Length: 306
Image (cartoon, rainbow, N blue to C red; front, side, top):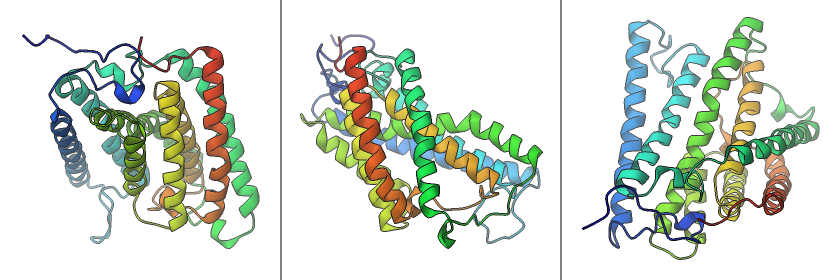
């Protein structure tokens, strides 16, 4: 009789091998992959539909019929987008537990849970590093026309503080969801079928870059390059904590600056990043990842399951 409840991978399994628990057969990973992707698409459609209904009921929709946004207010529209991405977390955790038949917490780390102390230490490094990275970027592009703010300017303290409150509440879930989907669950699902972590890391990194849309070639290279390093760091540290904190810090600072300059309604993403941002990322991505890998070794952070 098959065991009831979740089944862990064998002791000594890497992060990408947490789905190799002997459940579901050889092609079970295909079923998990297909159904979870379908649920994510359906979830995004449901959130979008709810947003459209609320905008219509509250008469808060855009004034132009050709507009691509749901709400005229950029903060409300941004909140809807963030929620639409954040739903990826419960979906992939459900997929791991009930389709992969493994503990949902193994998507967080090889210990089967988020290691909160380690996450806090990662945040203590990631936050100042991101501030320095943004500072270097601003100093490099200062005075260039392409770097000039294109928004409506400072929206006033009330609107700005409301924007920051909404972003602080939702961006951590949005950024973490992208890590759970691309660096976490997807890598583990593919890891059920391949022995090396690299096919999963490369494919997940490519999909992560493409998910940000088609912009500049430099933006695509930046995203793909960063994702490869982040994927390596997840395998190297046995969990998502280090990349979650960096992603949250990056997005909070980026969205906060956009709110301050009145650019929350902008449709640009990291895929539209200029070549200077790509060059800066070439330095800071390995700096953070190699540094955190060394730090994890010094702290005795688990790389494989117990």
